[in-house]
Length: 95
Length: 368
Image 1: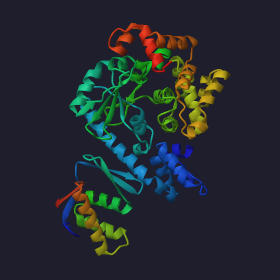
Image 2: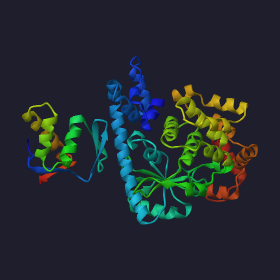
Image 3: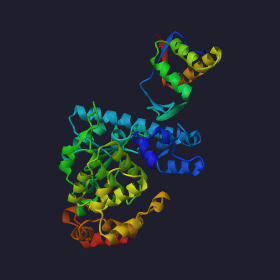
Image 4: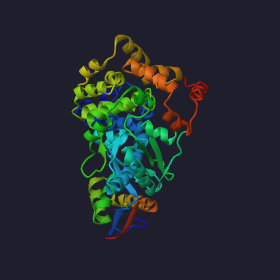
């Protein structure tokens, strides 16, 4: 994982709204009115990240639910978290 | 269409979840659904069984759902403010139907929020919207504010440069000069029957029967233009999501002199999508055979499905005239359009203008 601390906690910023759309989800940035589509795994990760106590807990659930090597999942999670943090939709910090 | 309505109302039989038979070419269907604002509904219907169609609708569906998120966030802010200021509000049209009838509000796309406040409360409502960062959009030159008020019209506000920050403050639920001249909805009864939008919500919504009448009127007063299928679908979803007292719908439509207009929309929605339980009401409201045939000739399912513009100038006036219930109301509609009251002249032009000059203006602009 790139800049993400596994024992840290992630939370949605106040400027973002999330809406389920079937298996998928959309995130709406209220400040810019831009929206982002999350596929099924992205949607699941968003839900876990914004409810779990730590990012590591979210990772543990994801690794149980998805048939993917841990390294690959960690890399993909890191990329998505970095992207969301960079866009101001998610913030991370120590739990 | 019926399957879409069932999906919207959360009633679709799991055994019949597909909106399209496998043999159907999906591309034109997807394009039609997007053009008529059914991308989100089509996406939700197709997702379980037709991934190909769902994939075609996905982008538009996501956009519509995102737009609704923004609209409802705006609504939350307005509701909080109006509640704190004890300012009653009735939510009309899209947002009201989306919340009260659709199983998921994101399935019903919206372009704005329509909020009805009492006439006495309008100045306060305007002030509070401004305090929330909204600015009033300039009105059309031929529809100045004074005229909007008398015709139960609306004031339009926008929040900054936000695409989804459009709010219309309405003076009434049934707007425009056609209804002011030719019909008579009971405004006080609408307020009296209005119901809370839901737990913890400040906004009210029209009672289901009144919402049926208001939606039907909105479709007809726009001559089945401006996304007519959205209105027809709203009626179909309202009919499925609520226990509609169709006798009350018929009684109010007749008492308000909206029988013909209501009949035409309910009949069209019933033939195209199906309105469970409305058969006797449609029969009761149906005008005489000649008018029935003329109006059905104007609003044909094929014209609606092809998206043809039904509201060309001369046809539009004849159409609206044919919808008037009583001949004497039709005579008043024509008379007052050509020769309006003195107060109307002042409200329209901002100064006393001769009626001949007004008449000449109508002729010049091609409105006669």
